[in-house]
Image 1: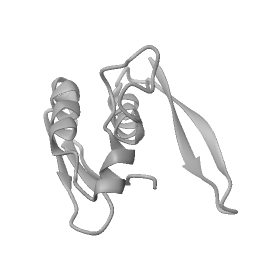
Image 2: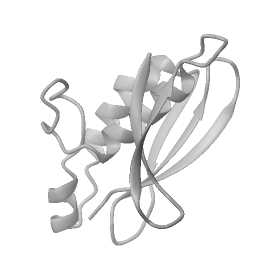
Image 3: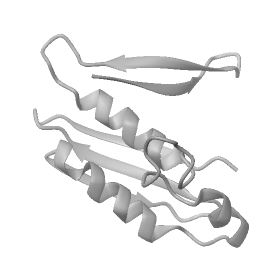
Image 4: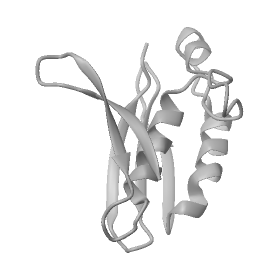
Length: 116
C-alpha cells in the first residue's frame, strides 16, 4: 500500500512524501497518514473518496467544531487500529488530537490543526 502526506520542511516550504508498507508488511503508518489527510480534506473534495473529509471551511467560519464528521472519520479508520480516538482540542480554531494503538501494540499521539 501507499499514500502521500504533505510535510512542512525546515525552510517553511511544503512537499509531498510517499508513505508505503514497511519491510515487515505493516500498514500502520500508511493508515495514520491517510487518517491525517482525511482530517485535512474538505468534505466532497476528493473525486475518489467523496465520503471522506470534514467541512473545515464552514467550521472555521462558524467557529463550530464538525464533531459529527470527525466521528464518522474515526469510525471509518477504527478497524485498522487496535485503539483509535480522535478528540477536539479546545481553542479558537479546529484542531484534533489523534491517540492510537497499532495492531502491533505501538502507541502514538498526533496533533492535527485544521488549516484556515
